[in-house]
Length: 387
Image (tube, rainbow, N blue to C red):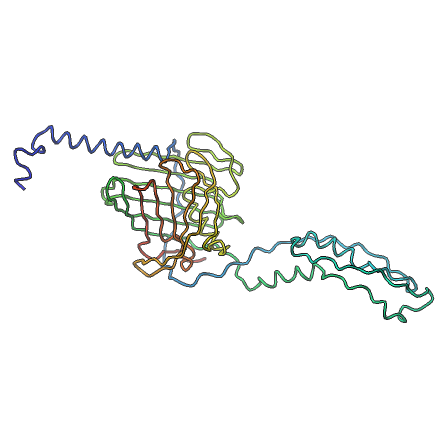
């Protein structure tokens, strides 16, 4: 120890200590400015009021849930016009049964599912009006194509045994954080999905460094509504603290536009998500449509970033079994594909676990080839009591 602090050591001199402190402060300031340039910041407002919830159980690994049945759709059929009954002595029209069927089939089924009408041959000569109808058994009416009501009844019956979709209870995911940013970094992270009726909140938090003296803390929160198309964000809040500096930014969502942190309003694409709701929206998509989570498939989700709204495409690239502290978890690897990725833009690869309600058990965030953060699930997901 004495050798380290010898008279020749710069730490023994006041100028050396000042230089060390100065370099450290410049390093933190540059890191803060770099993150601001990459992520974007805006003026913040009062924080959203957090929904309080208690987690009472751990989610166990299980077979993937069965795909839920689609919500039943009410079909309004046009009322069939009454056809006056012809007298018994009148000849029977040959095309009486075919014309109304085609008219009713159009609004019920997709064109590919509607059988083509059978060709109707001209009716043979009919007996005289005085001849009873019963005496001509050979004159049976032409066979009509299957009627749409009979076909439409098959679809609900086939899906009657499938469960209807119900949003999962509030869930908390706890991750171990590792990565590299001008050196190895470690920390913890969490994702909370909170549901209260048809209202939701998603909270993300990442802490780099020891909890008692973190070097960087980043939070993101989203709240909005639950509907037939998944999550509909209404407000997003972001916060970041680097050393002694803190910044906050917000975004607002309307049905037709998104208000960015700098005050600009841009058109909102259908199904747009923010960086916090994205993970839960993908979980909802894979739960309700498991065929999307097949190798080779791609999913496109509009994403609202602090400076723009643009579509992001995700490719399902493979199956992997990850060794977690609590179990070996089969997952599907989903990777973003950016055709024109701006320099330094953050991208997130995800590993979804069908046996854990399609939750993301690993999230790998890249800024560039050297700078990344790797989040891997530290314990089994915690959930609130089901209602």
